[in-house]
Length: 452
Image (cartoon, rainbow, N blue to C red; front, side, top):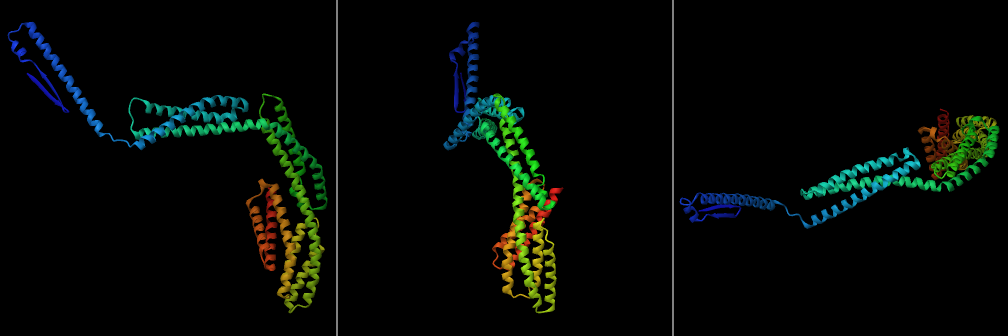
């Protein structure tokens, strides 16, 4: 007897000898039992072979459905995997190293400063855990598609690189702090010299401020009235911080000297700036006073010339306008306020402008241009002086000055640049006067802001 079964191209055959079958009716019970056992064994073998054949068929069909991956993609994936593995190892080492480092940083600079470092390590540790999980997924016994391998390796690389950058940044911060601490002795020495040199300027600034108070109106020196006292206070505070830094340097286990030295330098620099403002105002007022005397003398000459033009005016209307301008100018000259030279210059310039306007019809173009050219130099100097004074006031009160004053100052500077570039002296003169007007407005607004 013969059994046949075909599975996936595999044929299983089992034959039972005919004489066994024929012997059954006449054989003994033992023989029959042996034959039955043999038949059962053959059947079991048949079932096993059938199962094996079916499994091989399924594997063959599954293998035939897989897509062959190009060798270039395989190489790229291998390189990506290699880089991800390297990044993972480096991050693991970096986390371990920095876990010790953050303890040293906290002990040296305090928990508050080390908090950012500790947070970076905690974040790196979380990223490392996730990266190891993905790596385990890649390394387990379940095969993954090339797409999934690429995706997970890229994520491992991103996690490691981001965490590594955070650790490097925070570690670098503490490296800088340690460098500052090591440089603190030399920095403190330089700060000490700055405190001493600035302190030596205080008596001179005090005398200068006293002279300004005697010679000029309170409004003129209002912006620097408290500068010397503020400078003294800043220098005292800077000296105290420098002393505290020296005491810390004497303690081998202490830190913070670099911070104190830095604060001391800032205080000394601010004190120096306050003294600079006093000296700068004194220089500016000296220039303005000299300019006022010069302008007053030239204005008197202009008035004398205007009288001649008034008498020779081509018509009564022109003569009347010139006469009114002369009256205004004579009043300004007789009431000059030398305690506020900048304001007096402004009033004189305003009167000169009115006089120039009145003389416009009485002068020919050449005369007018010549006068404008002569006046322009003085107006430009005055505009420069006014802009400088306003800039210094705003600089000395930077935090309290609003946008309006700064905007007008910027416009004054722009107009002054235009005036200096204009070829026509008349137009240049008008532009320069506009510049001075904007500068005065800026000064007034700045002083108003400083009082609020």
